[in-house]
Image (cartoon, rainbow, N blue to C red):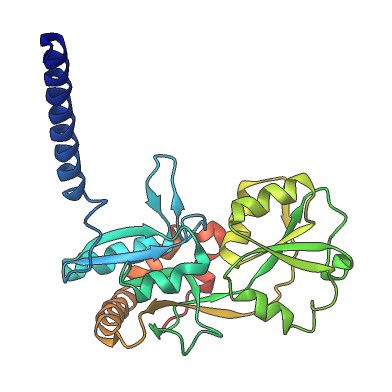
Length: 274
């Protein structure tokens, strides 16, 4: 065989082995990273949550996840010597699949009990939600009656849609309600005029109205729901331990103290005490 050919083949083989070695090392590093070790153990609590739902769960200015629900979960984990693993649920409609498959231990994210009572093992309700309609500040929509012929948007997978359809006060006043993937999409649609208003839970509604002066909140709430922590059906052991710790946090005032961090968004007023 030609020496040049032999040399070329040898060089290619060496290069291939070097790349394989680097790839293997990177793979080893990945499987030892936090991202790859989101596994259910007695020392971890993997919390599934909506990362686009301030003030309950969102990224702060430093790029860290925070919010009322996350702060509660951190304290629960601290008291049980658990490591909190935050797992944003990308597709809110698939949250139950992630829970049932073991990818997450619980859904703790402004999660409504009403209408889902038999789908999960629930904590006690800890927050009363009162959804509102958000519109643009310069809109001529000022009351629910002004929604006649208007298009509303809501995040897919939220229970409030059923509440609206069963609510005689608002049902029939609007033209249609369109489900979208995220509230970020809904906000862009509202800004561009694709829709006329958004159906939003109370905490997020207050947050948006305060943080964005281009938006306004219609004064009348359109439903009443209870938030709870959802666990896989039958997982009473984990539910009971989390509930026991939460009860202790209510009793010693920790829940109220955390809620005060979000007082401008009306969180303390919605807290349900046991």
